Every structure is written in C-alpha cells, then in structure tokens.
Length: 351
Ligand code: AN7
Picture 1 (cartoon, rainbow, N blue to C red):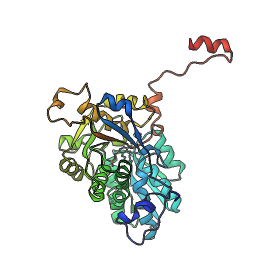
Picture 2: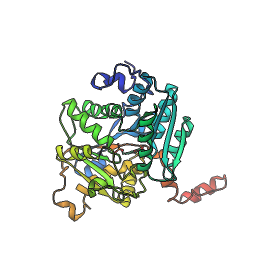
Picture 3: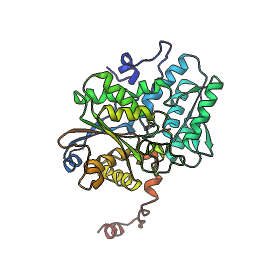
Picture 4: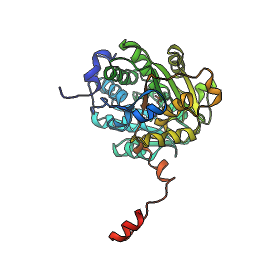
C-alpha cells in the first residue's frame, strides 16, 4: 500500500478526537540507518533514526500533522507557536496545507537560517521576540487562553500523540525496542513522546539517555535557566514545558539526562557527517552524550554510574537535518579554492 503518513499508519494507536480531519505531508517513515563503523568504535550495535528526512526537515512534522488535523477539524482558523525554529517551519507548512493562518514567535536573532527561511517560505507570519524561547512560549500560552487562536506547541497533547509514532517505527524496524535510545532534550516534548510510545507499544523498553546542552541544561541542574546559551539553538531552552515528564522517562527507564558542551556537540556533528549523516547541531547531542557516557574519551566523572552500551542495540535520534543550519558549518570552513577553467589548473590544485 502507498505510504500515507503517520496518522494513516498508526492512527488507531493515537488518542485523537473524532473531529480531527487529517492534514498530512506524508511525514514519518524515516530510515533507521545502520552505523557499523561508528558502532564498532563505541562497541555497540548502532543505528541513526534520521528524522531530518521528514517533509520540513525535522521530527516536528509527526506531531504537527496531529495538532493541525485536530485544530482544523474543530474549526480553528489561526494557529500559533513559539519556536526555536523547527516547530515554526513545521507549523507553517501544515497550516499552509490546511489553509490556516500561522503565527510563529521566535527568539530574536537566535534561529538558524534554514528554519527561519522555511517558516517564511510556507507563508507564516514570523514575529521576533526580544527575549528567549521561554519568553515567547509564555506569550503564546497567554494569547491562546484569551482568544480562539489554537496553540500548536508540544504543550498541545496531540503533538505528543503524533510524535509517539517514531517509537512505533523503531520497534517495527527492529522487531522490538532497542536497548538504549539517545536523543537531545529541549522543551522535552520528544523524550516524553518516545517514552509514552514505547510503553504503549509493548515491544520492550529502552533505557533513555536525554542530552541537553551545558548552557541550557535545566533538567541536569535541577532549576530553570534564565539565560540559556548554546550553539545548538534548537535546544536553547531554559524552562522545558515537559521537564517533569522528561525526568520521569529517564528515571523509569533506568536512563539519565546529562549535559554536554558545545564543543562535544560540534565534534559529534563532525563524526556523524564523516559517516554521511549531516545533522544540525542539536541533533548531534545524542551522539555527544553517548560518547561522553561510553566512549574511550569518556569523562572520569562519568565512569561511575555511566550507562553501559557494550554489545547493545543503540538508536541515536537525529532530530533535524544539517541543511537547517548551514551557517554553523560555512562560518568555520575556508572558502573553496577558485581556479581558472583549465585542466592544468585542476591537476595542480588537487595534487
Ligand atoms: C532539531 O522548534 O523546541 O525536547 O521550537 O528542533 O521536544 O523540545 C525544537 C526542539 C531537538 C528538542 N532537536 O526537542 C522548536 C523546538 C531539534 C529540535 C529538539 C528540538 P524537544
């Protein structure tokens, strides 16, 4: 049968109201890519769930199809979200598909260009807020309490329902849950969705390693971060809406939530690119966390109580495509060489 998106495939497992009217861009069905070379280095059986291959380039599309389907089915005319970028692009695309007005609030100057461009291209009204994602989210919550505008951040329960489908796909592809799941944590909707999905699907439960950026690690510090900072702008979030549920997922799964530095994130991004998988910085946090926990260079303080991945089936969730944030790469490499259009010049420049 032709693939028709996550609601068509897994709708019977999603708690969506009967008034929902499916709006889909055939999101989901993303590949679980084996990583044999990197797996050998880390002494585990490693795969990447490449969520950057969704229609708007991130995992957000799984939840957005559900949230927009519900909103349009109940007659909403306008949707709104706060976003570090990917939610904005996804909301904009699905709202366009549904014929809804989309308003997206982003932290001024802190959204990667591929995400901002996406939101604009899909026709959203983009508003920059002089503040953080957390400030923007507070504004969005307030306006949706006072007006009929529909909120499509992951506070919206249908977002979580849709995002559970990634856990279902992994279990279907592996004929069971992996032993360990590593993923970045920002507002904590995704870790909540995976854990809910694995528990519901009953094909086994992974340990969950949630990874925050050190400059935006409220769940590791145990308190909100007023001024979050990280080059991984997707997870530059100081007050995660579903923080409690993220901590529960880590605890119930016998996993943990850790923080990694921006250097570790960028280095993990390079490692993945060296295997042919280009992801945005936030999406490399899962690998950075796995390396910090189990790699040869693991930090001494992590040896005690660190997760053991040896010989285990490990899935890295790579949440967004590298094309979302080209600047992080192009700013750090030298411009490609320029040569005259002659054979001799080519030979001399490559030898
Ligand atoms: C690539 O788009 O919060 O822990 O507003 O874009 O569910 O928040 C993005 C988050 C990981 C963290 N990886 O997921 C937004 C937004 C990427 C992301 C996360 C995000 P959550």
